[in-house]
Length: 427
Image 1: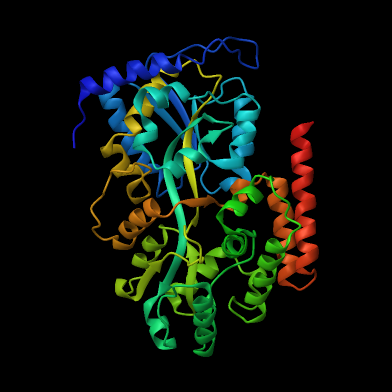
Image 2: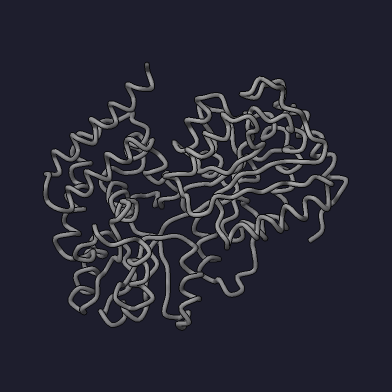
């Protein structure tokens, strides 16, 4: 699909007018940052698989606009390291014009520090709220203002082995009670139900937040994630109790706290684990295994609520407030939302609501594109919380798994961590 150059240039001009240039700020060294007529810098965490896809888009953008984007990446850094690297660069003499970041509380500190330019006028001018998945826009919104351009959106669900379900004599569950029965019968068949690895904490966290969605319900769950409701309550205690039940009933691997997520993920392709709670990237791993694609399936985990939600997040592009290249950034933002760019870089994780890539060799990704549009997501817990609260949760999770703390005490400890966070915001 070719792009209408007239629309591109006129749209970019309007975007630039709305953004203005973020120039007028001063570099740490005291010198004024100078605008570049044909350059942009972008800093991401994309790996060797994803970075070349974005580079293809940036090359096409250069051909259309004459603007070259220098793309620097720090692959493998993840949410534990990349934000600190961005923070260092933004305080340096030559901060990047643009950078990628996860939405929610991972991006929030940069906004609180006044380091990111708001995009409200851009959204309004171009009607992006109507073009984009509402969940993706929400993840880029802080204190009622739009700050980021969604790049990709991800949803977590159950990815399972159809043959292992068949061997255990079970089908896709439609309720949580049915899921528990499925797990018992899979254990009886000699296979681990949920393959999860506790090293780093975030893999089994996906199980807990699912259980919390069940016990708390969507409205309370959301209030818990922003610290507007106390964690020291029955619904949270019930979720921790269910988490402990999964360990005791051997619905997760024995010794899972010492297993890395990549090793746990391999259980699915090796046939020693029946399902994962994971995202659309799993289909690439399935295909790379050389196994028959018919051995794999996927579904939304049942919650028992009228609105069945999944865990999810959005990764987006942010404009540094120190950048003097707002006009160039405006053109790139416009370009990134064109169908050809989205099909190349985002694919089935596109935040656009009307894009339908060809299913091709990724039929399960195509299914999740539709499911993600039909099922809203709650923000994955380690992006809803700042790092200190997430770290506190991971320790509590470990203690619950080892039966070192009761669900009651776990809920109280979690509330202590949230209270410390919220009090810090007031100071």
